[in-house]
Length: 121
Image (cartoon, rainbow, N blue to C red):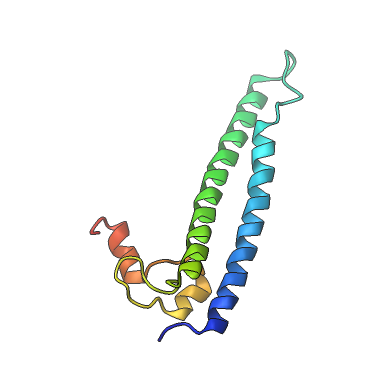
């Protein structure tokens, strides 16, 4: 059953809130990663430097995952604008509202997602 305008508006609001939140987090992460270490110098222990490098690597990994999520959210918002939100990108089938409730940025049915992850599509 196709989504109603009310449902689509609810998902749109949720997606816009997610986009705003992710954008703020990413801006903060970028500033943190770019900021030079004030404590870097001759007195800093090698283990401390290794820990700092590890922490920076973890921050970069999280930032990458957040960028991917942001792209998915923006894709879902674009589908709303195009009038195709709630339809699977692969099969064209309706995405169940329970899936959209759990993952509002979903652009595929569970079956299509599984096939894609297994490399069958």
